[in-house]
Amino acid sequence: MKLSSYGKLSSFIFLLLCSTACARSQPSSVEFSLQVKPASRAGVYRVTGTTSLPDQSQISVMGIRDLHPSHDAVQPDQLAAHSNYSILARRIATVSQGKWETELSLWQVASNGDYQEAWQLNQPNFKLPITPAEEVSFVAIAELNNQPPSVSQQLSRERYEKIDSSLIRSTAQGERYLQTNQTLPVNLPTAKTTPPIQTAAERNGGWGDRTSLKAETPAGSYSGSPRFKGNLTEAPPSSTEFMR
Image 1: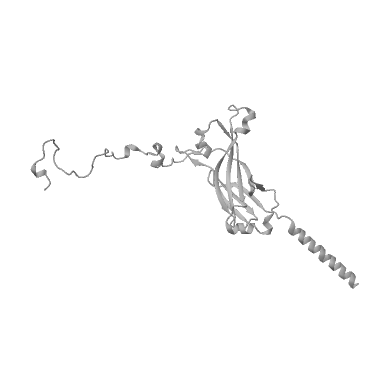
Image 2: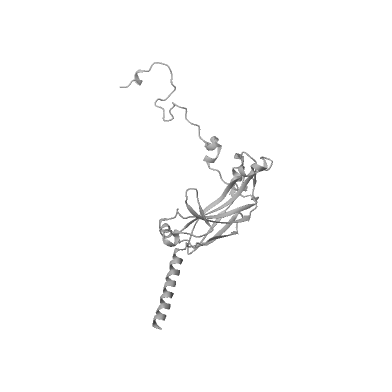
């Protein structure tokens, strides 16, 4: 009976060690999620998330709208080749106790006081008429190989060496990053506000308002106190004007 009991105990310990070793050999998973809600101010969205990444991890949060050329500008089979996107806002969020949050302001103020998105301000530079997507993608990215030193040390430990997650991505250079996103329908801005005050560097191609500047002294002239008083003539100098 003693041998039988010892054999059962040995088998149990062996199975326990095997299960522990197998659990350690399995790649760890990581949590990385986000939620998006409109804030109290128009054009502003509050983005929050949870993650199992270490505290002080840096997360890049962006609002992106896809842009497509108008259907009458290119052939239908060329739409994908000419499609582009605009990053409307970008902020860096810091992880604290497994959570992170930030706000993205998708609107900017044009010179006439209109609220516009970034691509609308630059629309005159586009070569083709643009049709914006009806949705905005809110994207959160955590670059695993580009973190503060204290975070990088924790990520390099055994439990983070291999990450088993459907959220993992890799660049062409092999850099790993986590990505998650949420897409919401977002209308284009239509509101107005007080036009911004332009600085001199923003007016007249950087020259400012030239009419407000004082007249410049002609080159070669002297604007200080005159050396001689009276009218200048071509008459020979008198004896009192010679240096003594």
